[in-house]
Length: 133
Picture (cartoon, one colour):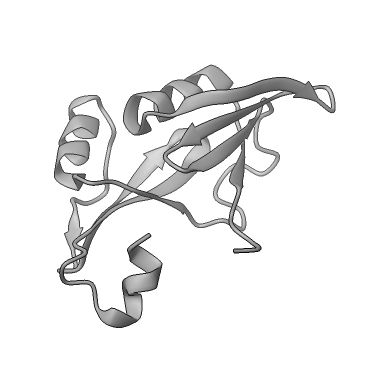
């Protein structure tokens, strides 16, 4: 495959708070921490993907041009209960579409994460390549 998404780049108004959030809820691990262009830049691995944090408050708070990014899980109900118990406020509970369940997770700096679980046994054939990585 010649192309793949390498990372999502996020500004962080409180980089330690952001790092802790992704460590706590998504088992993120820092794989690179260096200074670039006068600011701390941290790459965190989450599953097979990466998040690139820039130690600088967002220039335009809010979602800007990005609505959300997705993180896949193997047990969304477990994750939802855990986040709720640790004070994450959700606007609604888990949505079940049959072949997938999802919840929109509010993260630091108004970042929105679509946390989703796929039922590979019932994914429609036209969605198989998208969901069954």
